[in-house]
Image (cartoon, rainbow, N blue to C red; front, side):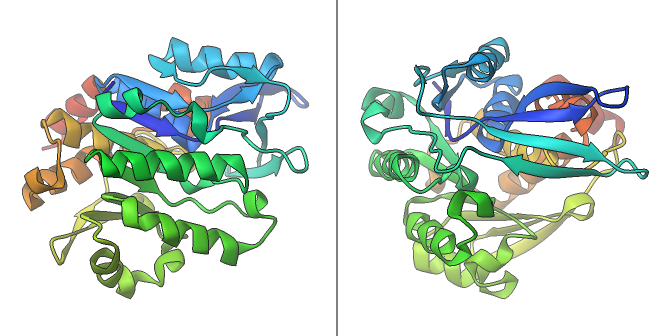
Length: 314
């Protein structure tokens, strides 16, 4: 296994063509990143646990159909799935309303994380949207700490969701910061930059927690790469029409990490600025090609599509 993600899958209910109709799609950052990596030529697995209902079975099937191996596929009556109800306004902008069973937890237990999986993989990736208070955050932190101890690369995508923490942003921020000591690759969006003390504090955070790489995604403007005490701004790319940027960030991160691993990188010592800048370009293209109109997973670009865009837009 090259790539393992840990986290939650989401059911998106997207507007259908007719009034009152909807299209059901699978999504969620860890699932999207795993599938983006699979489409970029990596063997990908995902640790998640889902409700034993039609939704849970649909999500497990979606992972498998897209080349991702569910590593804790047991369906349970206790776990439940976060739902995202998506509405569309006259400008075709999408808004999301998240619904979740009160007190629900993804219920992934740290005892279900298999050390052999971590030994065999090259990178373990998690997103803070998966850090529901309870067993899930314990399992996520355990996997990242164990992977770090084993000398594996560890990625983390900060993606704050207040529903996971009952609007207690301080508690979520505290947990995020406590996990950074295991992280090699950190992704921030411009909305979550305040969780690490602001843009100007990124280099201090890298030094304090020994983080090798930080990427700040800035939507259509591009991305800013922080590496080796310096920062580099890489412009964005105009590609297909993007209805909104939800899902594009996941495509970016899956494309970026896949590009790093496809270069044969197995440790932070093998990184260099040029390789990372190229990976950011690759990620920017991947994100710009990601169109949410068919759901996040349906729109994640494959490696061939990204490389075709790069060839045609030199």
